[in-house]
Length: 178
Image 1: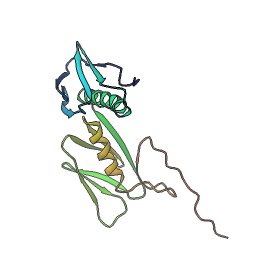
Image 2: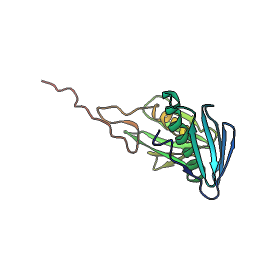
Image 3: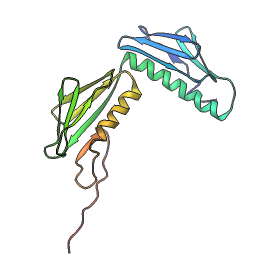
Image 4: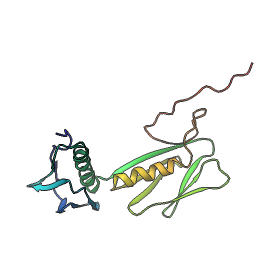
């Protein structure tokens, strides 16, 4: 049995979980999330716990078991605490600013790069070089952070670009003249 899948998910106070067949919706203080799960996985509510079970021991169902439990746990965490990714901009003259819901980056191109915040995502800027991306949907927060990082990935020679705050850029030695 899946080690992750067999763990029950504790539903904290103030969070409401509705299960309708394979459709699960979670409502909490920060918002509402809903998702449809695979029909081979059963989701049930027992007191203040969510239980995820599978029909058989087939490899496909075993992989879906842990995945479904992790996704429901992320939904519950998202509506209670939310998720955040922190990006750092490094490079001479590289900076970011907010214009309404748009994030505008000056990262060495001839033109500024603009990102519009998707529904449910909020950008915050600290010191022009630190970008915080916040939201309740973990997948959407991560994808938005990856899109912003993709505007100018950190290069290995000088380390210029946009990187995650906990990312370590492997530096290379430049060419040596004779």
